[in-house]
Length: 567
Image (cartoon, rainbow, N blue to C red; front, top):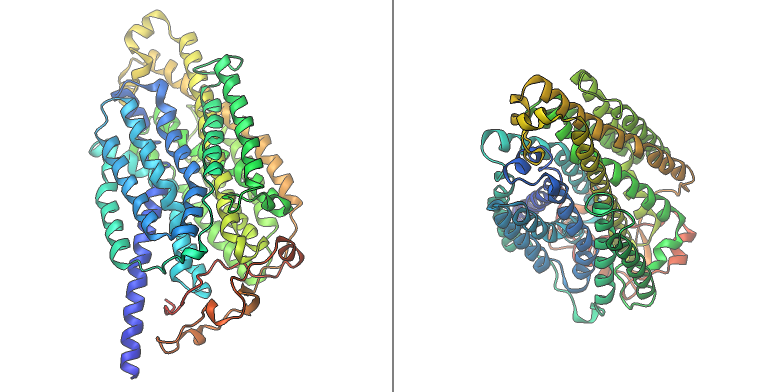
């Protein structure tokens, strides 16, 4: 009997590890593709002759994944996650195939857009599926690993992009997703066993809300992308986009306040902590992705680093982020105190941005790396804690929607940050090159749209110095523009209310104390915890009830048998 029990537990352990490996793989693919092109961009735009469309290679992916985040989250709740998850992986693979064979920038951007449509599902469903297959007591360690994957990808992306560009071809930034995506698809098909969604649990799909959210998000990013570059800020098309953003946003609020099953309930915004953490998350998205997207270009064009070296130079940022993310998480778990971590972290990020704005061609590389490490330290102190605060604010019946909404606004910040930094950079670069390049220099340097790091390094010294100076002076002031914005976010976070972290699971009408680890090692045929064992129908709880007690639990655990053994 004991032998049979151990065999069953080993089989269950193996199954969950296989599922988790597939989820980590998909999470890694989705997050890598937000940054992998940053070191490859100079070569890509030179080869495809499209520096004026450079920012869209990154922006379109982030925009597409952002729009689909809340949609995938809500549809997974309504109809079940496995089929939608596999569909998202398939879309991601198709986009990788399309982009990998691109012959011009339009073709590449289309492939990246298809990737983004799938990437949004990979990010949000990977996290949600963990709640479907792992008991709440054990879920923290898995989510922590996923947070580490996101931090790793922020630097591994530029590094891999640089290596592929230098050693093989930049097209492998896309082609590598094909075998890995197929492996993740197979893992989901064979090993991911989720409960069927009962038809009675399905509400009316909020189609109007989804469409309005997509329109508002797209119009906003197009405004920040085209404004001041493709079109003047006062032009008719920009004014039309601004009006469309405001109108679609207002209609979205109206629709969501009346929808039967809204993808983003307006009740979320009645919680002050949610508003403050969401504002801070959006600003952090602006700063983080605005920096990650174009700093590798600076390193290649200004310091003379090749694509691989530019990726390696981003490692201090990853190291700082991992160190403080793990350390602050351990401290919070031990003491239950968390308020000042995001405040201090955001202040550190603002200081790091101020230091980055002082960079120039003469600055030693180790100093630049120290600035990046400082920024990573600040980001690590705040990112995961903000999500924790959101989840600790709402009951279990609302925590999934709240987390998705918070992630959406952080991704909106990433879209805006990438677009605004890219727009300002490209505009400044074009103006500076026009002003500084003499007729003789322009003739020797060639078309500015076709500049690559190798081409710039091969130019005569006088021409190269003009181009290097233009790249430096075009990008570094943009970092300074973000300092007051990030500092303001730190001030907002000072007013967070530090509610006690939940130590119980609010499930089906009652607060249940988290079981001890030994309680989970029971007969494998007996659930370690099941919501069906408790009274009540669906355990719904009003927003008012959640606000009255900060110690209520927010586990987003499954409502079916949680009989998997702990790792």
